[in-house]
Image (cartoon, rainbow, N blue to C red):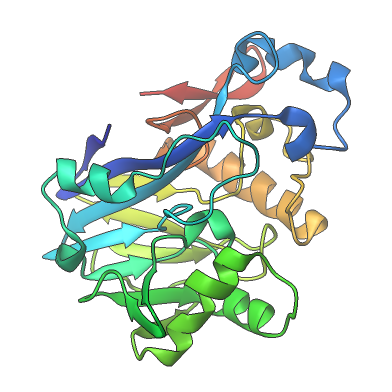
Length: 277
């Protein structure tokens, strides 16, 4: 169910599209089993007992309703047969928001689990699902996927057609989404990966994107996730950003952490760890 957070004058609503069981070996194939032992409490016991969340975030601030990422969507989901049904639109409806209420759709990156509700296909006609919105797309990812021939069908069907619909703007780090929301370039997982910073009333919230898929990575910044495009850059980005977020104690929302995926980075017994709200 949606969870609302207050960040100064901004309301941040944590939304869940889908979830499925977390497979640590699949996500982190180069990390040996014994390296996970200090994090047994974060794995919930037997393999797969912890769920990987596929979340999105709605921000209401500055007279705008902003949706960050759009999940897997209704047509294609994560691999395996244990994923829950897609429910992003249901979650929005629970907080009184319809597709026409969204002013801006912005993306951390263009991976298939972040773009799935973008478009509606009716025969040969493709139209934006969020029909009043401007879609803000990371320029580095746009260039990367437009130069490739092979890609996940969700990217081909739900992201690339935006370029033909006159609803898209390419953005990078430092882009003012609104007065209170700006982007930060956090590359490595993808070429143009962005995080979002909400600063309002002396409070800050950082939308992490896919800098980490599991809380153990807050300490183990050198662990490489299976889909990190540039592992060396991803590790460097994680190290810099996580140290800063721990230091300044910003509120963090991390879309793949267990729902409601909001908390802070804290130091416990010498390790950086996740403290949920």
